[in-house]
Image (tube, rainbow, N blue to C red; front, side, top):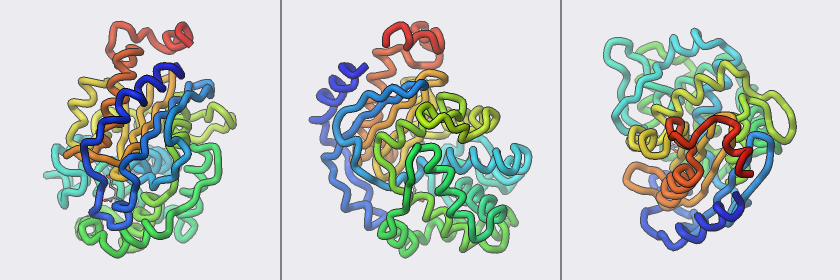
Amino acid sequence: MQALVEAAHAKYAPHATGDVATYIPELSKANPDHFGICTVTSDGRVFEMGDCDVPFTIQSISKPFTFGMAIDELGRDAVLAHVGVEPSGDAFNAIELQNGTNLPFNPMVNAGAITVSALLHKAHGPAALDALLERFSALAGRRLSIDQAVYESERRTGHRNRAIAHLLLNFGVVHEQAEAALDLYFQQCSILVTCRDLAMMAATLSNMGLHPVTGEMVLSVNSIRDVLSVMFTCGMYDYSGQWAFRVGVPAKSGVSGGVMAVVNRQMGIATYSPRLDRFGNSVRGVETCADLASQLGLHAFDCLNIGSGFLDTIL
Ligand code: GLU
């Protein structure tokens, strides 16, 4: 596995296509050459190469975790009364709701994620950020914090997300403190992680919510099912269908350049490389994950994938 990770790093490091996100001004400062690959098996073995210790903001990769946290705390029905589970076919930041229900399409687009943040804000009040940081830290297995500069940069310029929050307020999808909920959303997107943290978080999802190193049960088995389902159908922006076809595992990416993929009961994979393609996915991240999935037979429907026993036979 270490040799595979190193080979993938050597193969894709020269790929210099794609651009760093600039619509949140602070993100434009990212080093486009940074590139890390980390895999963590469901029993905690780590294989990594490159820039796996470089901190970056989690951005949209926070969305599956807040969705899982809301389901754990409020129950599936209460959450699904506020957000759907249907791919939107539109941009992640589209100012739109689902025709007929007036609910956000799913928790992976901004409208859905802001709704989930509002549910958590309503449940926890001013303690919401602490509760969220605590859960994310438990998922990573170490104490995480916020990048204040990125948070303030997004809060200052996030007019589109503010429009979405007010659309949600107009339709009564979020409670009246929509601005505070939006603030929580900006803060959750600004949580600093490394590529290794993301791989640990993915491994925790792959291990049914049990952190492979700390042994802490961080998310319930029921919420994991729901989280992985929406990641599978909606996690990779407008490339989600192609990703499911080509790579075949639940995944989530974010505009700062992270990609997190979950191989059910087997392992978590994370990559970090800030150059994005036209969909907003990390160019090197997509190619690395597709390559590893193909070599290891990780696609959920690959004939090589015979479940959790498979990796054990090669590791
Ligand atoms: N904070 C970013 C936004 O709301 C997250 C976008 C993303 O990573 O997809 O625009």
